[in-house]
Length: 322
Image 1 (cartoon, rainbow, N blue to C red):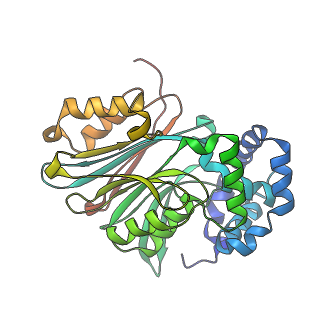
Image 2: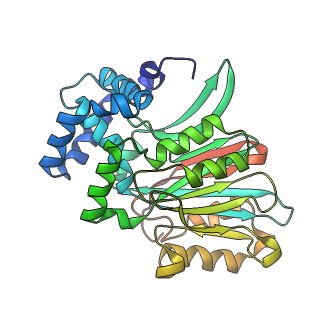
Image 3: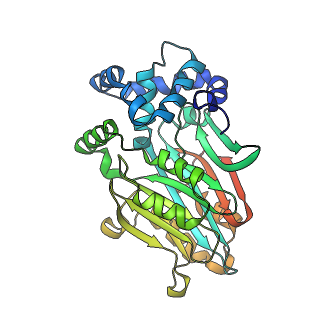
């Protein structure tokens, strides 16, 4: 964090240069040319609306140093990356009161995305500020933790995928509304406790819908915030007194659309195991590494114990029934 924004993430972008070019190329191939052209002509707007992020993206372009990665394409990918992810996030309160949090991140082009995934340790004046799992060439954080305070994962919320939602997202980007992944990073940087993180993640205006999963260090500190662009659409909190010892979020509004597929699988396995049997290893091995929660698009699993400062990430590649 002591480096200038342009230098801050330069090193991983240079290290993963060839794979970034490949991933960006595949991403561009799926987008309409008018959208690409729009960003090539208007990327400079980000200099005024999100200057710090703009400078970091300038660093990406300089590090990769390829005509295949223009500033317009870099801004576009950083703005729209969140439309391509599917995930499972779970928070559990163990019987001893300890909060554990784990997530699988699924993404289009999983083989390519695995190659640009790395662990980031953000430091200020020699002291750790937060840890994150990131994609080289992208400034946002989808998975991160502040040791001794809280952990955060972000899941995609599908209503933004339709044509109207995409147009709304783009319009809000141009007016300075932030991506959720940038708000997550802001929260990790500025907040020192769960309450601050909760308020910032719940109330900061964003440019796209999403689910934000936040775990703390004390009993019942766990929530899924289903975000609209302004405010929350719905919240699910841990409440062990009322029998809610875990919360699960995939990519649907389960309170409206029902809990199915990955959501149903996670609930079934958690209930079958029971709270007494749950620890961080069981959560990974008996829930999140079980199909369909682990599937052909799964890139990695991260588990957190915020109170212990534990963040552990493993690469996953589903091979079908074994």
